[in-house]
Length: 518
Image 1 (cartoon, rainbow, N blue to C red):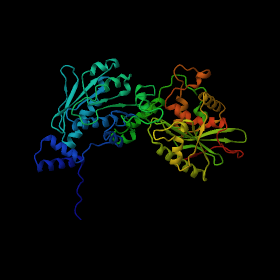
Image 2 (image 1 turned 30 degrees about the vertical axis):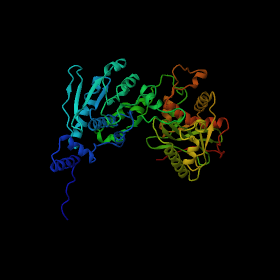
Image 3 (image 1 turned 90 degrees about the vertical axis):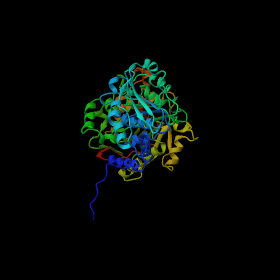
Image 4 (image 1 turned 30 degrees about the horizontal axis):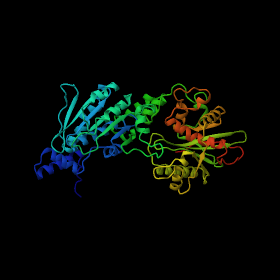
């Protein structure tokens, strides 16, 4: 047997391709790069970066997620490709403060990391950074596939009211707003998009990309990308908008050793920052009027050990209720039981499917639910009875294709998921808050330690601005992801209260078991 040859690196393979093309025919530099691109070269990308890179339709894009998920680098590769493929392209990196673009920020990543990869792999040529004589802002020229230049500049805009004035008269074809969570006004959208889309000779979609760590539903980015694009009646999304969540798990191998551990340590003891920076969730910091602060206790109501994977198991003798709050962006699902013992009745929340701030097709959601049903059937060693409960919107809101959510789930599950409607008339929110509060006060509501999103809801759900913790106004929690988690938990409780759910039967003295499960 002959000696095994060493596998060529990506850089060596690129050199071979470029060398072969140059040997066959002396081509101009930009033509060599264009041929290498046509042969399929692309930069190293994580799975989500790849989907963003290949999005040729969206004009308004939000790249969001936990810290160090690769959002900015993915957007910069998209920016460079835009400049390379289009003649007369003009791209702009916008930050609120100058320092956000330097010392590891977007501009430094472009110059020190992204462009060198394109030069090594594609033979892309670009100039060294310069500063505009008048504005003092940095810029660079990238040679495109036509042999002409596409410009990339960097601008800081610390004051929202001055955004329009700073970019007036400039016609961009691509804008990247980095660290967008530090901006505080929709002006960073409305003024910018008016300057994008008029660039001549640009064939690609001229777009604006925002890169942001999560803040909360009160931030303007949340309303712009999680609310405005979705039709309230059909739940269909405007195709001009795109949302991409960048999980750190995809990018962790590209980070310095121990970086992720430092992020976890930095957020320890702060559930809001931990939700944002570790799990990429859009969570508002409580206003000081938390709905369940006076009655919820982790020590009293949470059973098990999440670190060891120990949680509450369902009791085989009782019906499993599945609560749903469905939506185009936020979907939350709970698995719970109402267990009657010889001396009291206890509600047990033992599983959750939290899909808040995530766009998951209902077909996939139905598959997830059936997967959990199969799992719990196996744990209980029997075919359990399930009572699926949603609000009435699953029955009376018609989707764009003429269907309703309840029927869609029934069809996708081949009849396994048949939903009931919990009453949701006037005052139902107040009633559900009251019911859950009473259960907590009487220690008749237990939550599995593994239901992390549910535990977070009980800590962070707070009242809407202007509401007080008295009377009817106490029924108005702040709108956002936490409300959806509360809704899916409380719909079955409300349904039982008014007698619209099948809750099973009594089996003598029963108690939820605490055991480890994966």
